[in-house]
Length: 116
Image: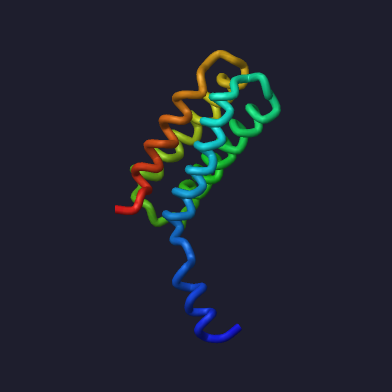
């Protein structure tokens, strides 16, 4: 690989914030898609919910790491949200709660992560 190609690739790499924004975009799009389709395709429905839960679990786990550079109160809030998402997702799968709140939380996170 030439130096120019390497430099071009390095400048095109996403920041962690951009990666998180994109991950939330993918997860949220999946939730919206299955919400519109309803529970008719239960496999896709639970798959989208599980993908979203895994995203939040990963964020919560990352915030629990000692080396995480985010401020402690923000890390605590993200961990709390991750725990809520895990519980609430189970309720949505059981049909006790609606998917809308998960979509709203994700959209709020995307607003916070959006480039300024």
